[in-house]
Image 1 (tube, one colour):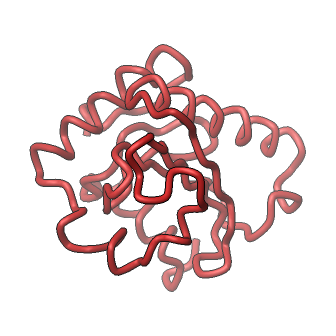
Image 2 (cartoon, one colour):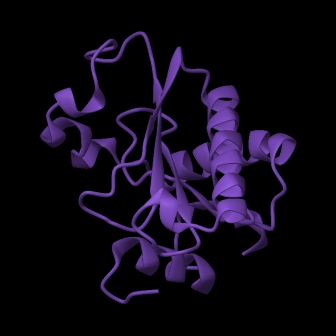
Length: 159
């Protein structure tokens, strides 16, 4: 893990019990709630291995990573009840493999358009950060569904 890697640093915070967005540890990664909640239930799945591309993972680990990402997305879909889930694995800014899972709703500003068509000043505004209480509710909702779909190694409530 690299000290200069944002995702590695967030994972180290999970391990230290200081990442307040942590929901659950699975075999290949960590489910977390996004720092901003413009899209209610926005979640991420952070890979335990610091590589830049999917093809850099060993085939068995890669398959498990993709299965677990789908389980986190399924749990988010059941917990937050969007009309559609958007999946992103970009890595242009933070190269460490991580999935962005965006629940999309009928009342989104651009429900049919990509999330990047909405000004970041809006989606990452201070007003989109959940309160401590809202964050706990989101984490609890995601964890409750994730416990039904995935093999969990550790939960935020265990920290």
